[in-house]
Image 1: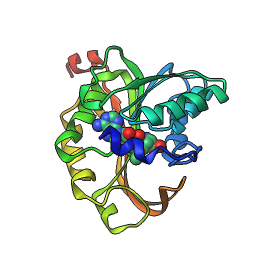
Image 2 (image 1 turned 90 degrees about the vertical axis):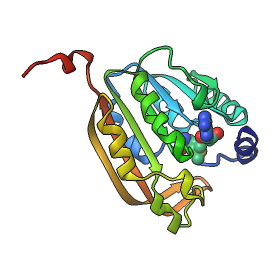
Image 3 (image 1 turned 180 degrees about the vertical axis):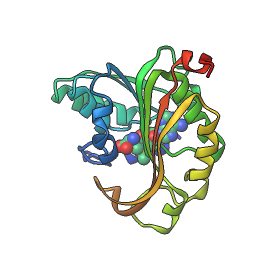
Image 4 (image 1 turned 90 degrees about the horizontal axis):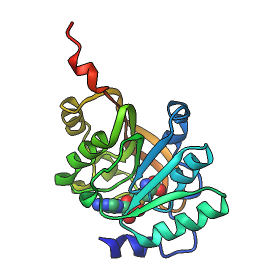
Length: 209
Ligand SMILES: C[S@@+](CC[C@H](N)C(=O)[O-])C[C@H]1O[C@@H](n2cnc3c(N)ncnc32)[C@H](O)[C@@H]1O
């Protein structure tokens, strides 16, 4: 796994470009009054650096040490600090609460996808947001990037089933065809799932109508 991703990030160029993911950028207003953000599967750090530039305290988790090295170098060039965690998401035990968890294009096998949502919600402070953009199963028909393997793509209904039993409000959950222009690896029409979940405050579940 690490060798697979390290090989992709060996190039001098940024695989997914310098600019943050559009969906993250479009939803920046949700985060501006927040303090802490965790970016999962963050790669070379395009979202993390953008968020740190906005004044947020950002952490980035990834299995590729090559990508995280590039991230730290770029963060320095931007005069911002991003704390990096070199680990598989599967081994991550959230040890603090974050105001937001961001995840763009993390490719996980079907059997681990539920864990992404469970851990993200577990790591969120009450009222915090989980914001994600992931390739949908329909991406198999597009040539704009992502895995050519259904086992690593996401199904909207599976995500709905997972989210329904988590302590969250579903703010957005939609499958959309968008046009990607993210570095060399994400270019052209693509089918994605866009997700915003808001963690329900602990005491909300205690409110008796
Ligand atoms: C397609 S790239 C996307 C990178 C970044 N989120 C972006 O949009 O620019 C997927 C990233 O997830 C990381 N990754 C894949 N599986 C992982 C896992 N199980 N745990 C942690 N990181 C993982 C890879 O190393 C890679 O950086």
